[in-house]
Length: 196
Image 1 (spheres, rainbow, N blue to C red):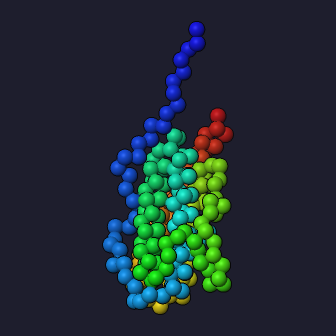
Image 2: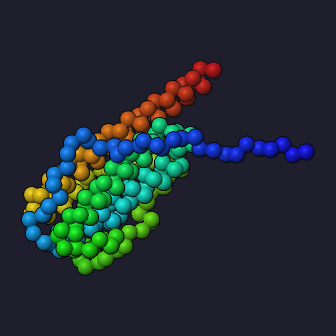
């Protein structure tokens, strides 16, 4: 007689996960005037290789792969992903006000257009590499936002981008904390094994 096996189950509960972001208000979503050039720049922030769409998808992928074994980390990563969704929504509103389409196509200054693709994702196999890739992606996003702020002459857009940057910096701090804890516990485990 065959013994019944227990079903595999993920006991990580995601109910109540909220966006992880700075406890600061966003400025009103408004623009000085319609400007398709600015809309195109923001389309890159929405759905280019370095973008909110890439960040959301990468965080969701990492959260899924960590949830069974590292529930607190997975819950935090999901909270960061939710914050990135809010960023995507704010950028999309700005693009619409600027007269641009919301179509998940990054429009570059040289005329190239590229629809968002999962090939933009970094999907490492272990938690240390996931956290490192996420930190690097946040740094790249901040760099790109600052570069676009230099190219955009609209104080309303600057306000929104500066507020998004504050969240991205907060995300880096949290991810670095997880990474340091992971490396510390890994080093401590290695030391304990070497003493035995």
